Length: 246
Image 1 (cartoon, rainbow, N blue to C red):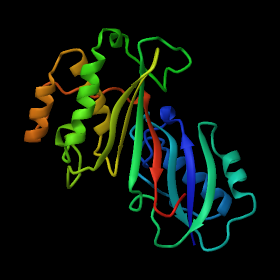
Image 2 (tube, one colour; image 1 turned 180 degrees about the vertical axis):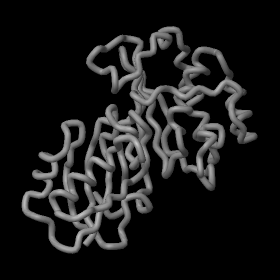
Image 3 (cartoon, one colour; image 1 turned 45 degrees about the vertical axis):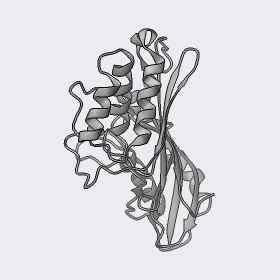
């Protein structure tokens, strides 16, 4: 039987979702807890990778088990897990349904502020230069991306992606009084894509590069001359959608 897990985690203490040979990951932590409760080694497949220090306010994973789950399984699992990981629900799906390959929509949000907040050091980018940024230029840079299907300039150079094609559904900035949030949604994302896009928007807003520079890089599918990847702490995976989950 296949089971889906809906969960959330603060990624500050983890080297991303995926198992690592010499570092603790979210996947490893959950697999260990599930394996203890079920009394058998259990592999868990996630809906995608998140990098070191990146968070997820909504995340899905799946695992296979040959029987019905023990009573109060979610409650027991939450008790085994550390406070920075929470299980929202676990439910049965068909054997063919897959947490990664069946996800058709993913949305991220990146949070930054020029105001220092000692309580959000690992969930918000402190960026004092934001007070000097041209917000209209930033928004124009974000909106420009909606005209494209290939995003080679916003993929880490060591990526193993076979295609740079992504269907982008949203790309915009939300400007609050002391916090700015970049919202982006697509069917898939390239490695490091969101952090590179946020860095590009900041560079455009500070006039370090121009909209024409960004357009040229996208047209030619070449890296920007001044590429900037922002730190991971402000980045959240916020929504994942499947046709069979309401």
